[in-house]
Length: 451
Image (cartoon, rainbow, N blue to C red; front, side, top):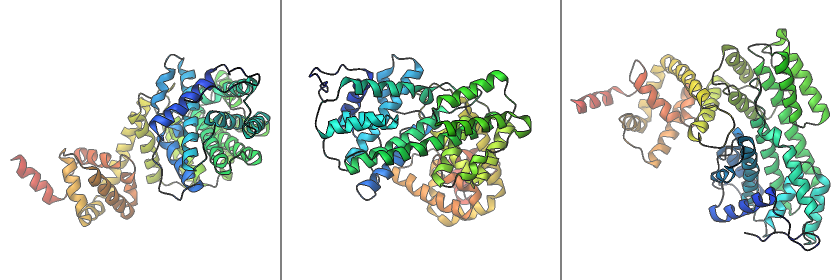
């Protein structure tokens, strides 16, 4: 672990919570390595960007809930603070991984992380002061640590605030900030310094993502019923907690007030017309799916709104179902992660809805599915093996996934089987549908083995 940074007067900096957190992140990175495997991309910036896309999903930052073992270090804190600190710690670990992937020279990593966090909080003067001190190899004054620590605490509400009236802005705020922070880290470690103008543009995009998501989630929350006066105030307070620039905040407030109106209930926000990138569309849709699970139920009005939203973003039903599976699968695997929200019950309810929709798709496309399964050959054998409860090797699972994707290309309505968890869904369906998904030769063989 690096020794504490000395203050301007030569005395060591007192270890506030941020200094201790960054020390721990640096130490864990050295001992445990990266949070996600490095992708097979050209070294430098391309590999770092590909890694960032992967780690945002695998670390849980996409869903606002970092799935990291080190979160246990904050177990003595209240839930909201525990989540907030786990988020900041995961940001730090991601930046350290990026430094390694870009081949950045050795340096005072803890202080470099402080610089990036200052930029994330738009503390531009502080960021430039830190950068100047690092170039001159001067010790950082205490005031810089205190200012960045305070700025992060001010952002804690948008990173871990409680949802009100089903308006879950926390997750979207975490992801938007994580993406902006990661991109700034890539730029910083590749260039060897912070480009303030470029970092400002990153934050502007992050704010735009939050603004659009806030409008969509407000419309979702109001899809079933108009909120009471108290609920309206709570929603507007959450929007304020996002700390958006004044023009963006005013735009979101106007959109929220339109969503409150009974005659506008369930309408898509006008801001969606400006959403063009595939990444932004996926971000909005996945966060909306997650928000719909908070209270453990999904009303007909919410489901209709989600379908309308997917259509407005150009996402078809099979792809929407695949997104739903990914969200549900993350929470199924990470029920013990640090989180202040209860969504497990909602994920279970979503699974039942999903099973019904896929069962309907299978029944309508049964003949085509059987033809495709038979023609793939090996897929039939692997399905039979799995359905009988035999364990598949990692190589067999990989081959089955590839062949399921081939089947999905031929039968688009069943593309969900190619999504993460699709294999298990297919096996589950083979046991509950009124017909057997396995080819007749395997059915006969299975009956003979039972006899």
